[in-house]
Length: 135
Image (cartoon, rainbow, N blue to C red; front, side, top):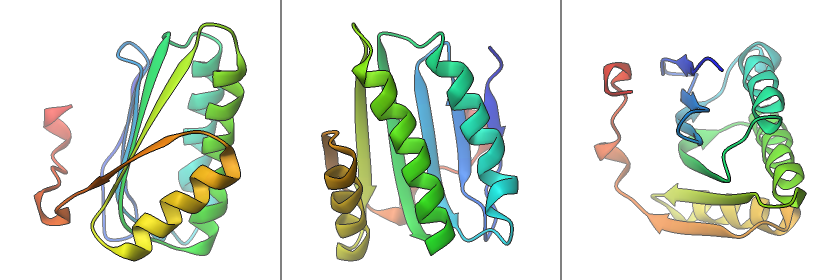
């Protein structure tokens, strides 16, 4: 399965999805003008991944900010992880990195709505690596 890499911009988060490693990562800002254009390929990739997932999937979210349409898309993505975890022998580790109380609260809301357990990690947003070459 091909990796999915999308470079970050002022409105689009860095997206790194690697089936071989069982890693899904989104970080940055998510305020796209067309949420479906951004999240459509992400959801499609995750749907394919669910059929050949690693026993442990690590999901890292590290957002500075996201808008309401991104919130809905993120919930769709998280719900795909819920479906995967319900399968026998699959484990999901969700790391929600935050740098302020608002982002912490959003993560807590996603945790409550999904029923998954999140690891909340306070982080310094200024140290995020957005270099695609490192993936």
